[in-house]
Every structure is written in C-alpha cells, then in structure tokens.
Image: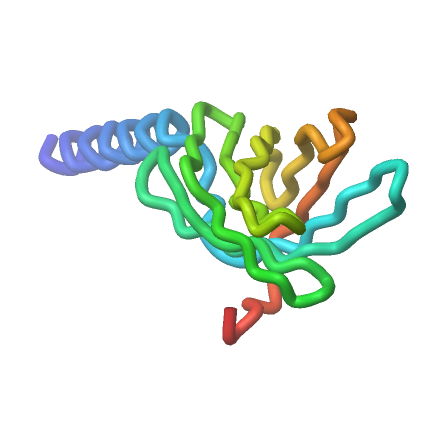
Length: 133
C-alpha cells in the first residue's frame, strides 16, 4: 500500500510540474543567431535574452558590432514581444517593436522597419553558448 501511495504521489508531482512549466511558456534565456530579410537585403544579428518568469531583457548585436538594448520583453504562451532601442543617425533613440512566436529552439516574427514596411526575422538558439556575450 505504501508503494502505491509513493507512486501516485510521484505521478501527481510530475504532472503538476509539467503543467506549471507549460503555463510559464518557453525559456528563451541565452544566445540566439538571428536573421532579418527586407528590401534592403539580409542582415544577421546575435541576440542574448535574459529571462525572469514571463518577462525578459537582453541585447542585440548586429553584424557591424553595434549593440542595442532589448527592453520591455514579455512572453505569453509561445508569443514574445520586445523593443529594441535603436540609435538613429540624428542621435535620437527609437524603440523598434519586435513580435514573434517561439517553437522550441526557433523564433519567427516581424517588426516594422524604418520605411514602415513589415520585416520578417528568424532566430535559432545558439547551442555553442556564445561565450563573451
């Protein structure tokens, strides 16, 4: 009888833990290799997310090495949204709103480019760790 109770308790704890993990959404913490494709061409970025619960911050580094802060990050289920603080030629900083959907180690989404056109972006989690980021 004690063995049946122990097994039942273990099964219930595992089910509760799995349900809690699914409700929290994916863990996007770490480095991601991203790519944007627009009328201006293809550009690559490295994104590092720092997640705490359903919110996150981070940094985006473009192929020229320019670092841009990621702010206001939110995760709802598999949907994410965040702002990238982009410095303009005038010196002003604007917030560019990114949206996406997480599917395992991949993210696909859009943002509105400087021209006002919708730009597609994709990212894959960097399994190499990207040390030094």
